[in-house]
Amino acid sequence: MEAASIPGGDRATLARSPLARLPDRALKYGLTALAALILALIVYFFIRLFGESRPAFEKEGVLGFVFGNDWNVNAEHFGALPLLVGTLITSALALLIGVPVAVACAIYATEMCPVRLRAPLTALVELLAAVPSVVYGLWGIFFLAPKLQPAEQWVADRLSFIPFIGGGMVTIPNYFIAGLVLAIMILPIVSAISREVMTTVPSDHKEAALALGATRWEMIRIAVMPYCRSGIVGGAMLGLGRAIGEAIAVTILIGDAPQLSGHLFSQGYSLAAAIANEFGEAQGLHRSALFAAGLVLFVLTLLVNGFARLLVVRAARGKRQAPPVEQGGAGGLLADAAAGA
Amino acid sequence: MSTHGTSADLLAQFAVSPKRRRKDRIARATILAATLIALVPLALIIYYLLSKGLSSWSWSFFTTDPTGNTFFKNSSIGGIQSAILGTIEMVALASLISIPIGIGVAIWLVEYGRASWFAQVVRFFVDVLTGVPSIIFGLFVYIALIIGTGSTYAAYKGSIALSLLMLPIVIRSAEVILLLVPHALRESALALGAPRWRVIFSIVLPTALPGMVTGMLLAVARAAGETAPLLFTAAYTMKTNFNLSQFMNSLPVQIYNDVTSPTAAVVERAWGAALTLVVMILILNLIARLISRRSRLA
Image 1 (tube, rainbow over the protein chains, first blue to last red):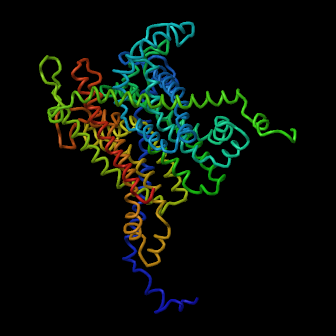
Image 2: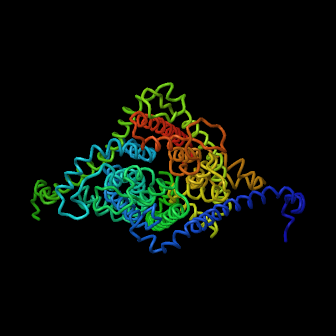
Image 3: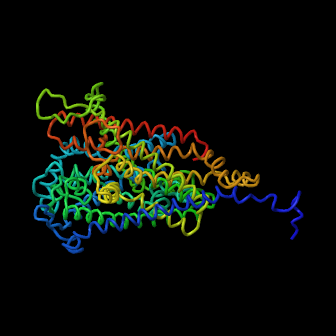
């Protein structure tokens, strides 16, 4: 070897002493341990959560717990179906109402709005994310729900021929109000991700559509939407994850009635709401049942979020292949928007 | 097409048919309407917060503790001093825990882990953490620190629950910023013979820090508004308390308790507390935005 090319002697003089190398090693292994700690923590929590909920699962059976339609604390019967159904109804409503509005917001901000308005509009929608969930609950129960009750009653009376929607008394806290407020709460995140995806549509595609004589709406429909579909679906799923896990606003707005209610405008319960509402004074089997509800909730959000991330990442990757200019950034930005909003 | 066709003919031939034009107009009007609808709740929330909240603001509102005395007329129900201080204390401790750990993990991901399988696994788990509902963090801490140690609620346990919630936000935002630090900077430092840790502490971190502040502030703002993780970790107490190993009040929990009260005055206090909380969070968001505009990275 031609070690002689190093001026002033051999490599040994340039090499760091073992002592000087110590902080480097320490930092590297220390940080690796930190990262490993996070993994260990999640796994530990998951196992402990399962352990704590075992008594409830043992008494009711896993299927009996999840699909049993009887949540009776006094009789120590814990079938979480009313809770699960409440969670599903409210978050489905949140998606139905929230996603179209959020996507429209994103389209308006990226394709239609004057450039000068874009930043303020985005900031305003993002402001919705800064409002704490307990404030949404407070506002919903004291303002929105009483104001909307006559309208809901009107709809319930007119649509009384449709099962699950019509007929019956409209109570102030109900499934619909909880879903509506959840829709407002997921609006910023769904809109942020849709916007992020829409800005990555190559302008060639849009200009080509316009040059072929498409109107602006046709351009949006044929050039923008197909390109963004999986990203938007991913954003919607992230919103769904939020809606499923929301506890405080829902527990205030849904009425905390632990039975399956006949229709949309009556009181109900959800998994997260039950935990927030009952955990404080729960003991023994009741507490275990609430841990079990937490586990079901946890698994549900894991599935939804996993699927959402898959879609968002795929959307970002697709983009990265298409325009070479966009290298880097896209995936990180998406993930950032997902995390930050 | 006749060669003698005038431009008017051509226009007529290529013009958008009335049907398509109508469709376009309807679609654009719908999109605009939906955008405006999205802004309605924001306006309503702000209006109600201001109109209901401001009236309960007063000097004594901020300087007294809630008394729990709601049954007798003319007795003071007290203010939200303990809630404000509790929120500040617990969120500060949560930041002290989650920001160093979060930045540490982000540095590891960018400088050491990079694209290795282990780094991918860590990234995946951080994403998992992002999606975990906040109330589940409360359950986690309850299991680990209350069942696990056989003790009861304490403020620091609430802080730990909040820090778990902040962790993924801090890690993700810090990682994005660290990736933006130019490679040339690291390489020049390494070429000058600096060891890796000096490169990280003297070059990478100072360059990235202003950009990372934004993500940290957003995480702090998020934690300040959370009720669910505190409900059964720090619980509820009325007294102002500086001891982090005892029960502690906080703004979100105070609001949550007051919402369910049948007494009108207590609900008024909830509005006042809600306005206070939203103002605190908005200030944090505003500072974050200003800093991110100033910072050269991000």
